[in-house]
Image (cartoon, rainbow, N blue to C red; front, side, top):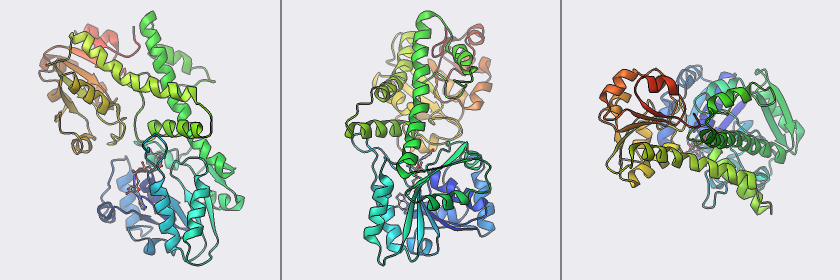
Length: 431
Ligand SMILES: NC(=O)c1ccc[n+]([C@@H]2O[C@H](COP(=O)([O-])OP(=O)(O)OC[C@H]3O[C@@H](n4cnc5c(N)ncnc54)[C@H](O)[C@@H]3O)[C@@H](O)[C@H]2O)c1
């Protein structure tokens, strides 16, 4: 058992703290947001993430998990300090490192003994060296310390499962034994361990996210071609995915990727490449195709309805993907702004994300269920593929709509079934 502090109690930090406690370590989560810490201390989860509430409660009860906003309480006893703070996009798309730098400085100020600082935030290549420099400059006494990059690959919506069942774990450091010591924290997990240097570990994270985003933009480009040649992208995707060299995942055509990772990470990688004198043509195309998908669904609505001014559009889903309440860089936001700008009235339902979006956007009506969204609507737009939307009572839905139009931005419905049921149906890339 090791003593671990985790700086940042957001999606990644909280999942990391809770899961490391579940693995048997003594963990303290640190966050500058005192309201968040107060909630977590009381066992109230601050985000919606399947399975997280139970693990917070059981590990608090077992005394393996605690939360504080005081670095002086968390750092002196810790052998390992994970940094899991946000790295949001800066003004030109570059990763903004100010939270990471603040955290590194605060850790140094509270250190009393040797620690291994583990960076979990997604950061530009070389950030581990910046962290080492900041810690070195801000240490009161001369205390040896190590810096290890341990990028996180969990997905929101299945964070706990992903943490506990990783495809691989990556540890990069200038000091191999420090990397191996961090790997040992995960000793109970049955997975492949990759030990490498600091820069390579940091690059693995960006390259992985950029590749997944590329697959999504690739299939969306195929969808546009499918629409022109009368082919069905869903079946094309299935046919491609059966090839073991390709595989089926991240090949769903639709409104495109969103969330707090892919958009910012692809942008940050592209901007970083540019500052190093390389123009990343492919990454730029991936980003452009992705943003265009959000416009294309609105164009489909406009085309079917013969204009958008005065039309009532109901959105099914707001979160950037199912099983999360996260709306950061969600396609829904661009879609709503576009629809409002074109004179439509927008209402929406999402099983989890409505309170989060409501706090930043009050120009739409939030409804209690999908049927309330559909009532007197001129069209419905499926934005997020929540499981419950696949099981809607289609006859009931159609009976309350002003016009039975569905633009399915996630291809959750079968085109033929929808047309047989009397809907005017448009998917993405479907004949
Ligand atoms: N969200 C994901 O699915 C995911 C997956 C893999 C990697 N990542 C990466 O992990 C990092 C964290 O992402 P997130 O989604 O958890 O962010 P988040 O915004 O949900 O959480 C960050 C937390 O850090 C806290 N914080 C900021 N500065 C602090 C400081 N100096 N001391 C203590 N706490 C501080 C904030 O209050 C916030 O609670 C990012 O670099 C992200 O790219 C995210």
